[in-house]
Length: 127
Ligand SMILES: [Zn+2]
Image 1: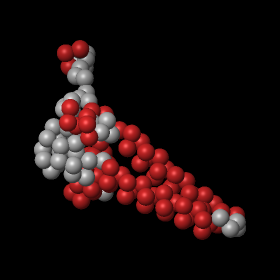
Image 2: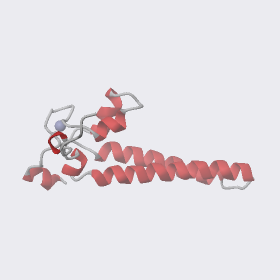
Image 3: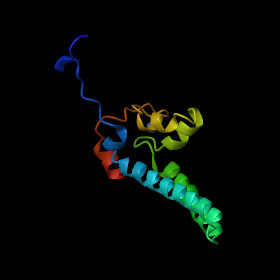
Image 4: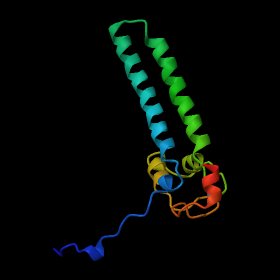
């Protein structure tokens, strides 16, 4: 087996979410979806234990999940053409891979601008 040398090692390109300063939106969405999941699991547990918290936990979970989804779709956009990249990926990719494909985007699927290059001063003004 050939030994890996430094020549074969390439530094990975910067992620577009980091370059466009939108990584926090992905973390917030994961927090919101995690909260919703926790509410649903707690609601199921309360049903098993016979407590009266099932309905409030389900409502909180639905609001947290739905609100997070709506916010995530609206907030994560191409810095150049303002296309909602979450919605673009949901519409065009498999339900199994859209989130991974979204995180690994190199160009905007709408305007084809390179997302991984350093943003211009105009982009910084937007975000
Ligand atoms: Zn675009």
